[in-house]
Length: 181
Image 1 (cartoon, rainbow, N blue to C red):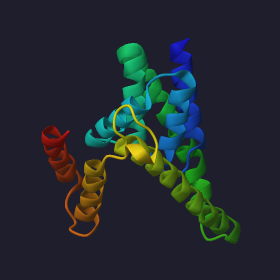
Image 2 (cartoon, one colour):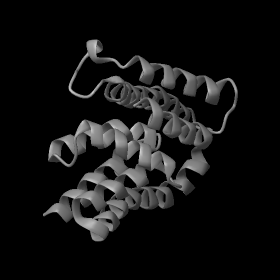
Image 3 (cartoon, rainbow, N blue to C red):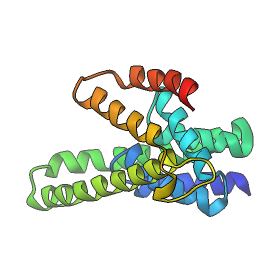
C-alpha cells in the first residue's frame, strides 16, 4: 500500500507541478501531511538534506521521503513517480512547443503560469520560514528565534548581494548552528 501511495502521490506532483522543485515544495508538504509521513520539523530537515545533495530538489525530496517510508525500494518508487511524468511530457510536448513557440496563445499561457510558480515558491518559503524560525515547543510569532532570523537574513545577503556560493553558505550556517543552537 505504501508503495502505491508513494508512486501515485509523487507521480501526481510531477505531472501537475510547473516551475520545478521549489514550486513543488508546498505540494510535497501537503502530501506528507496527508499521509502523516513526517512532522513539519522533519520536513524542514528533509529540505535541508535535499538542498545539500546533488540533483533537483523535488527529486531529492521524493527520494528522501520514499526512503524514510519504505527503504531503498520506496526511494526508487517515489523517485520514479516524480520523474516519469516529466519524461513523458517533455517527449510529447517538445516538438509541439518548438513549432508553436511564437504563437500568441502559447506565449500567453507561459506568461500566465509564471506568477503562479512565483506564488507556489513564496508559499513554500513562508512554510519553511515559519518552521525554521520557531523555537521547539512554541508556535506563532511569539516563538520566533531571533538567531534564526539573523542567520536567514545574513544568508540571503551573502547569496544575493555578495554572490557567495549557496553550498558555502549552507556549510557555514551548519557550523554556526553547532555553536548557537
